[in-house]
Amino acid sequence: MTSVHSAFDMRIFGKISRSLAKSRHHVVLIVPHSSDEVEDGVFIKAVPRPSSRYARIFLTTWQVTRAALASGATVCHFHDPELMPAGIALKLLGRKVIYDVHEDYPKTIATKSWLPIFLRNPLSIAIKALEWITALSVDRIVAATPTIALRFPSRKTVVIQNFPIEDELIASGNDHAYATRNPVVAYIGGLTPERGSLEMVQAIGLVHSRFNASLHLAGQIVPASLRDKMQQTAGWDRVVELGFCDRKKVRETLLRSRIGLVVLHPHPNYINALATKMFEYMSAGLPVIASDFPLWREIIAGVNAGLLVDPMNPKAIAEAIEWLLAHPSEAKEMGDRGREAVRAQYNWTQEERKLISTYAELTTVKSTSRS
Image 1: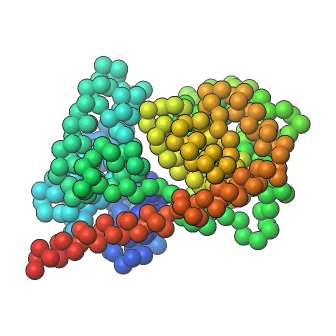
Image 2: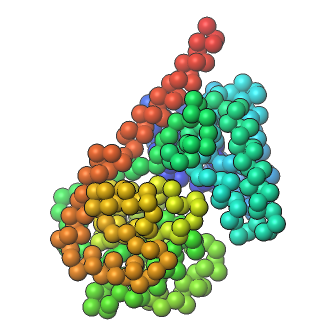
Image 3: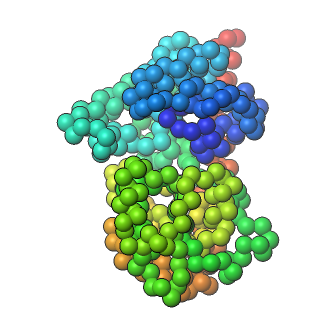
């Protein structure tokens, strides 16, 4: 169940729903979408797309909940904090309920620019309280990171991290040999101010012209006013704007790139996050230029898979780009080490096992209670 994400969100559809369908669960994904359809064994049940944020919060959540009830599902797995009341209601109606927590929402809500300042702290406190009630009510909490898991009761919390599907993004044969690629720097994901959008454009503008480097941005720019600022920033003439990309396009973009960028700001919700794009770059064999957060340093520097920088310093980002382009052999070795780290540790296979085990526990308990 989601009222916020797209039908083919990589965590919700690409990993969780597909993995459950593959393990012979009957999976119905309830999501704002254009129409009902079936993809990879997952039944996508569409509810109308909301016309505004407030319509989503007050109308779409009800439509998603109603569709969940009508589906006859025995386990209801929801992914958005605005669906917490629905999760509690579904539990009271006899469903097994899982709350999938992607972010530290009490911290995140306190920084939302679209909310009036005077409402941010009260709403943060309210969400924290609602999460506490939800945690007491539901059967399981699925946390996207170990840090998020610390906020919930350990006895009912499982960490299922958003690691890449192994080998999804790697090159086959020599068609995309690293040494033959153009000097392309890639960023995959949503483009917002706090994700370093302006700093990335400024950085590519500072890279010496002899490198002939370009920055490929694969994601939607939000808000629209940010695009105007980016276009007015020195370096925009070296940017290739790809817009939203499906998984095929993401793979193609990474396989023609030399470097992956993930220079998120030191935002409370990012410092201890495990950025999916960072692991996807590693999975694709790209050296990573990442924000120098303690957790990220442990991962990137731990296997020497890239360079760490101050994400607020475009000059430092530019210098890291120049170093990797000037040292292609060392850059490739970093990418190779990152790929091996994904194969050994940071992959979806091990997370999938925890997901299937969690569902087995819930469905076994239900079967036993009937007997």
